[in-house]
Amino acid sequence: MNDTSWGAPSRAGYWGASDPGPVQGAAPVGPVRDAHALNPSETQPMPIVPDVAASGGHQDDDRGAAQPSGPLFREEPAQPPHQPQEPMSGAPQPSAPQKKSAGRDLGAAIGVGVGLGAVIVASLFIKKAVFVGVIAVAVVVGLWELTSRLQERKAIKAPLVPLAVGGAAMVVAGYVRGAEGAWVAMALTALAVLVWRMTEPPEGYLKDVTAGVFAAFYVPFLATFVALMLTADDGPQRVLTFLVLTVVSDTGAYAVGWRFGKHKLAPRISPGKTREGLLGAVAFAMGAGALCMHFMIDDGQWWQGLLLGLAVAASATLGDLGESMIKRDLGIKDMGTLLPGHGGIMDRLDSLLPTAPVVWLLLVVFVGSG
Image (cartoon, rainbow, N blue to C red; front, top):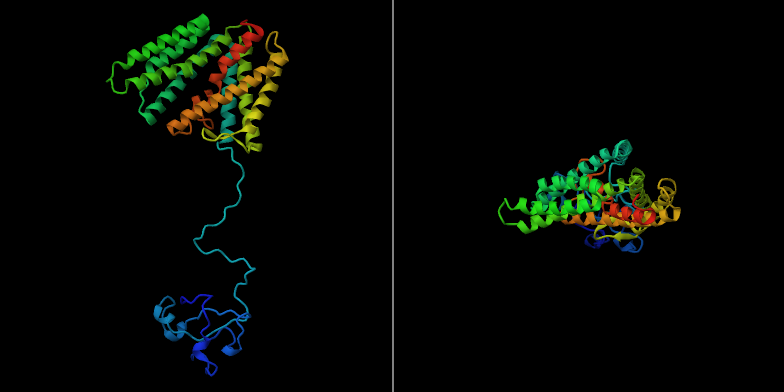
């Protein structure tokens, strides 16, 4: 087809009223009218159709397109404006609306979560020392994930060996010697990091030891408060309350935020979190806190559980945002891939770690150290 457009003027003037007709051999697709009888408001000119058969050329041949067959007009447009036109080949097609996605393999996440919960609860009520070992293992794996990502993404070499040894010792010292033992182990771990890094060249020393001390505080020291909770007479119940409230808070934030979330909580840090999700976390955690304090904690009161649940929702959310800040700075989505549907161990400890000292302190205030 030639380049004549729909809006181009009619070529009837070239033929005149005495035009004998179209070129011989052309097959008009509509009746031929006298050019002087045409009313421009009633009809629209159509592009000239080349006589491919007469020219003997291919339909893409420019020589064939140069031989018009005459001024041809249709009584009705081929595609009236009110009829939808078929999209051109290669044109972007409008995508169908998609349903909200959880962003992870929900089946795997539930299965792994249930499995971890069963192991933790079993070790918690079989023997306290076994659960202390579970905490120590989680701390070591979390330190390995954190230091590995720091080295991969920022070339920061926080020494893992003193961190792992000192972190495990910190948890055990907190369980055996209380808060004093935890502080002493923390100080010794920081000193070991400083000395261990001296065996390598001085370039990057400051950033490496700074990251090492931060990792020692962030992972094992905060986890030590779980061991401190365990030392009470009703220690397993306290730890279970801490775990249940944190999980319920995360679940409430996820469920409510996924279903009703519209207003972003901290879009620059974690775009997926919403204010509605935070309200869901508070409501779920306060309800679970009232039940746990009344039925699981010795001398606990339901109103204390409401305050405990509110504090847990706040600390768990801040902990989640804190690790999101770290992951954004590192340019990663998850700290690891050890847990299908969850990421790594650190991706599960993010809300637990900062919540542990909060729950330990409030339980000591409400019902004593036990």
